[in-house]
Image (cartoon, rainbow, N blue to C red; front, side, top):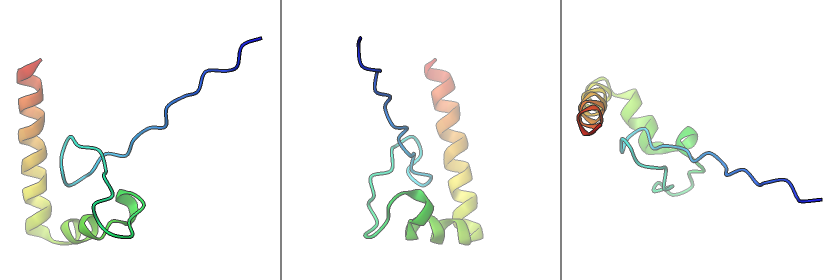
Amino acid sequence: MSSPARRARPQAKCPIRVGEACSLCHPGATGPQDCGLVYLVMDDDELREALADNRREHQARSREQG
C-alpha cells in the first residue's frame, strides 16, 4: 500500500508586492494577515489607490504575455 501523496501548502501572496509570495519581510509577521506594512497601506487612501493601479498594470502585463 502506498502512502498518500503530500499536498503542497498554498503559499500566501503578498498584497503589496503584486505577484510575489509573502516573504515575511516585516518583523513579527506570520503572513499578510498580520503584516504591519499591509495594514499601513490598506489604511491609507492614497497608498491603497496606488496599489490598485499597480495591480491593474500587473494584470494587463500578465494578459499581454499570454
